[in-house]
Image 1 (cartoon, rainbow, N blue to C red):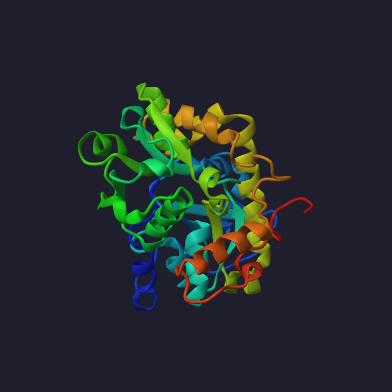
Image 2: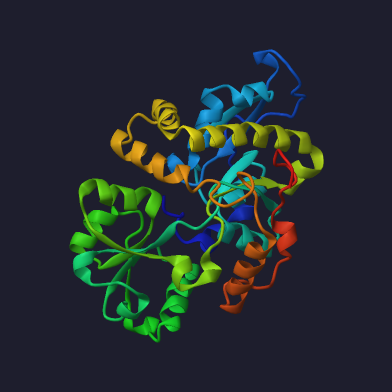
Length: 337
């Protein structure tokens, strides 16, 4: 569930990409129709399949997408970040996160978030309790395992600064996609994890963690991660398709909220290689997180986009400011705003 490595470097290769994903197809109507007449669409994930994506697999498995007239193919990204793939037309829908969308917008990539999969940022800094790391004030002199992006370093510097500490006193080690648990045993003291996966796994293993939720130490870091994105061209050319897709996705995530065990069972049919106990436990946790305190699943707030994009700009992570209202929309979600 980590972000792809060196996000900004990958975004810079956007215009040099020439490969296409299989399964992308021309648009078509999607009224009540036979299976042969379903509109084929491709969803590009942000990483390997995990419980963030369960609602999509439920919608596919229970026929919610087909009832909306869609034949949905869920694929993993082949190369680069999801934002540049969607911007290049190499997929209809993508799973991304607010940070990637904001950076992409500053590079004139026409991507827009149309739904938040999880309402609040469930990630944070985790360490075994014996490391004694309970706040950013304890980071100096420790080893942090990360993936090497500029925004990651900026977040570390910001939260340490709030606690009177300097990032110059922190040793940063690029561990890439290495396993968190083996890394903290051998090479590092703490890392940035998503609690819904690695945190739940620690509980199942009986490993006690000190977990520092990002927004508890820096409120601006309560950004949307992950989100569903589309290309602006799709909004202009086929808004009905977006509405149909989000209708199916909303039903899928609603089922995952109401019956997480059944949702986990459906998800495991698609990715049987995953640990069943972890998937079930993670699904129970995320059932409370998908919608959380929002009036409906997927809805996003303008102030969250404004606050986080300004936070990024103030720390030199953006070459220019963006218009947050152009980076996201709630208009395709079913139900009243």
